[in-house]
Image 1 (tube, helix red, strand yellow):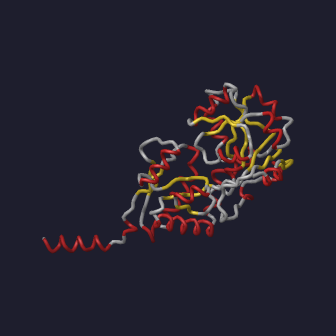
Image 2: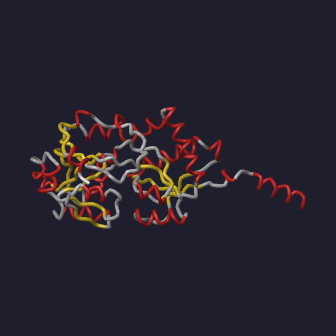
Image 3: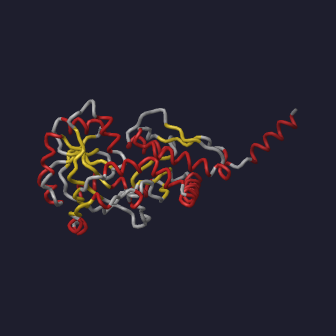
Length: 298
């Protein structure tokens, strides 16, 4: 019996440590992250022969982004789905493949129908500065982009409070990513029926979202990098993207808008090219405004 126990123990010790991890814990469990979660599940599945079986699991606690990042630092969660920046890449290990191919930086505007008229005559970044006030999350990484481009902003640390601010007219617009705006509009419709989608203006700034892991979790980073390479080669990455966003982008970009481009000076220098043709409909843009001034302003 003792010999059997010793042999079993030796065999267990010989099992590669890569097979020990069975759960990959994330904290962003809201429906607007369903694509990132499903893609993560797919990447873990197509790499299980080399790395062992693993399953994405939502953390049992609801967290703000700031709380989730602290949990990632402490190792309480394994992964986050985050827009990149120089300071973020200094603190966490980035898997440098844009998950949304630039879609997150294409911002449609949620507005209050009572003040929607303000946007009809806006055709430049200066007119945007002079006439309307944005709402934005206090801890969102791209708040700095709006400040750098000198856009008037009111902030809140609470995501839900932003819709209340828009519904009561404290702010004029809430810029939301093309990938998230439709679901959010539907979710808020009962509580704030006066919130609608503006059809005059869109914003754009380079803002790629990556998978991020703790800097010590190089094995998971290696696994996700390998999985993304496989998924790009076999077409499953694009297929999953189209499943989640193909019909949405077609619906939401059916009407041409003036595109106001903002500068993002906080990006690292090594951002990979983004496949914007996966979602960008050329017919959706009538004019690009603000590009030159945004790029030249420091």
